[in-house]
Length: 252
Ligand code: PEP
Image 1 (cartoon, rainbow, N blue to C red):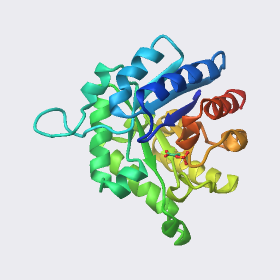
Image 2 (cartoon, rainbow, N blue to C red; image 1 turned 180 degrees about the vertical axis):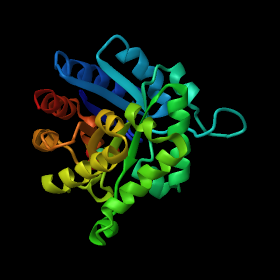
Image 3 (cartoon, helix red, strand yellow; image 1 turned 90 degrees about the horizontal axis):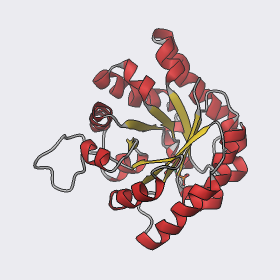
Image 4 (tube, rainbow, N blue to C red; image 1 turned 90 degrees about the vertical axis):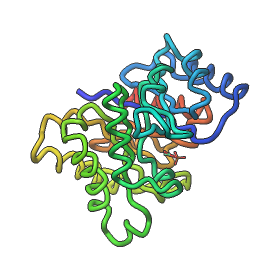
């Protein structure tokens, strides 16, 4: 049985003072909610602050990226082992902003997934199509290609211990959300494709939806078949909104 997960992605936002308030409010806002796991993924410099604030609470924390390399001469990189030093449970890999703005291709994303999982982190693998790709009706081909790169690198069973977030690129930070039917179609497709060869892995794989999730649309999105929670960007920066989304998952 997959428990729902709501994970925040703060992106490049925050500061020590505002984070302290936000973390405190997040802890209070999601206290007592049952049947849903919650986490926040924060910029690297604030992992220590997240660890200090969140340890001993039901809110887990993670990073927004991780290096594919273990250690050595990789200036500016942060390894999976370093993230573990700060108590991270999750590492987002392959976010569309990293793919589009920082040139991360499927191969690098698969290497990051591998490095994270090998170290004991739970990778949150982002997949999803651009608007052009959706209009060209290649959404399923795109998510298959992105998943296949990880399967080729790490084996299909690796998905059972990971989180996959379907994030249509055109829905991220735009306020545009696919129809519930469109969300269901992609989530059903991903699970069904995997189930053809690996039913147990398909059953265990957690599939989140991400892209303009808000308290007002969370309940209906989380009720869609094969949606196991959400990856939340903008709304995770407001404790009341994040709390509302976690509550919707808890009640779904
Ligand atoms: C994201 O960046 O992962 C995301 C889902 O952003 P937003 O919720 O702001 O669309």
